[in-house]
Image (cartoon, rainbow, N blue to C red):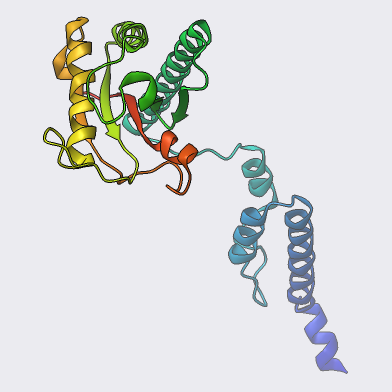
Length: 248
């Protein structure tokens, strides 16, 4: 009995009291972390609290957590990365707007000439693709332009001039019916010469030849299965692919 009284007089109860206060403080910190619904702050508080018997205060304070909670979370980005990202986004926006402008101009001349059955335009990424059926441009099995092809190609030349930053790929396509003439041993030659004929026409209308390429693909890339006359007519076509080239 005297030993217990001696322990009380020596202040041993302060250790137990300090442990109790520490546990209470820990409990309130955990409540605060959970109520904030911030998982990162909760993990930080949990990992920072190291309480042992006899330790009067934890290694993290409540006021410090409150101050940190009030600070907005920010993503550290270097000035060079930020500028590059903004430049890329701006470039993508410009390319997208230009593509829409080209598409609008194509739709305008298609409606003007009432050629919606023969000309289809689409936007695929940064490219604008104009598909013209071969029937409206060339006689069957030949690479000489039809009389009605001139006004169509003139409108395409005008669009190309309006957007000088865009390159124009001219692609000739055919169906899968074999052709074998003295001039065209196969559909490869026919599609290639047709694409080249269109290229020469555009150059004659003032388009810089460095912006133009012509390729014949034969029956390699059909739009539809070559199972009907209608599908084969769709597959016989010339495509204009307008795409802006980035400067190296």
